[in-house]
Length: 50
Image (tube, rainbow, N blue to C red; front, side):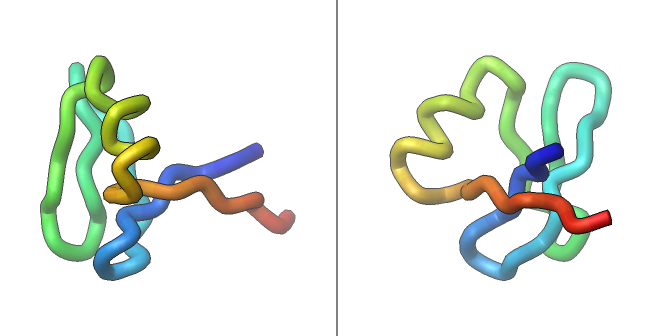
């Protein structure tokens, strides 16, 4: 399963009520803004290794 990563500091983006938040710096965006943030390079996807 893929995870969302904050591109600036490589922090894991964790789901909250109606948003996601970086576990390192606290950067957060609404779930409706995920696509825009991904396309602009603010967040990226990574493959989780189990």
